[in-house]
Image 1 (cartoon, rainbow, N blue to C red):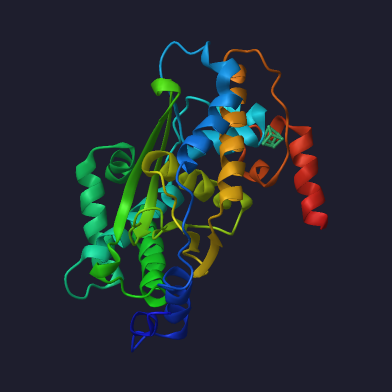
Image 2 (tube, rainbow, N blue to C red):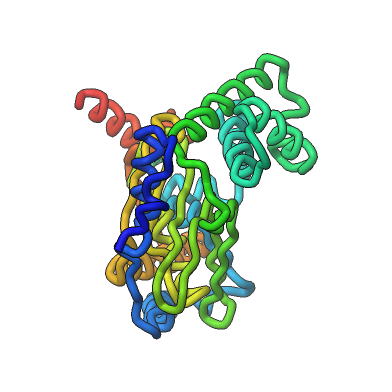
Length: 315
Ligand code: SF4
């Protein structure tokens, strides 16, 4: 039976109530998964990998970004492989908004979006990493753009997401890691927000990833990848996956099933095999035009990419 006290918190606006309904629903649809699921999935990935493993001199770390790229345009994957992203206001604003939302989860008392963003910027500046270096040399106008964009997203989050209760065990930037083939391949990920706990083989966690921009199939694949890594790591998957779009304050959810996890395992196996072959020069990279062409650094010299975008514009 549904926990009605939990499901209808007083004072929630309709957007918050909708998000709460999608993410919680305690006692209604928490599925039990079969014992042995993790071993079954490990077998699926390792069977797909076996040809590639002999070529590895050191452990291969694989995350959602590389997998997404290798399943997209392989020419772009090879071009960008090993390069670091150049930050700009849009990228840094995304990082700041993520960090501010993370702070809002455990912040004691009320905080305005701007207070959260200022605190996030302070912490990022202290990190001494790529984004902090960019912030240090950014002009006042660029810094103001970052703060303004991030504060707007945080404001929407606070407006549309239900306040998180401590009993939901919220965890932000939760790292995941699973070792395959005796550690030759390491799958890694970091979930923006985890709510709930699993009990035995009953799945109890919802994974939420915060996204900027518009919904894209790759976002769904990213979350399925996380669900697979969690299952390999813990033995039991999350019960629900959600992408929360900060710009539109929209939540897209999907329930985890055994079939979904098998598909994710096959995608990882195939992706790692392609990745190894491309890096070794044993596979001719496949040009695959798609939505990513818009931000591809090779676009100016890629007739197929430009033709694809022209077709898209014609509708
Ligand atoms: S423009 Fe598109 S098709 Fe061309 S290399 Fe880039 S991603 Fe691939």
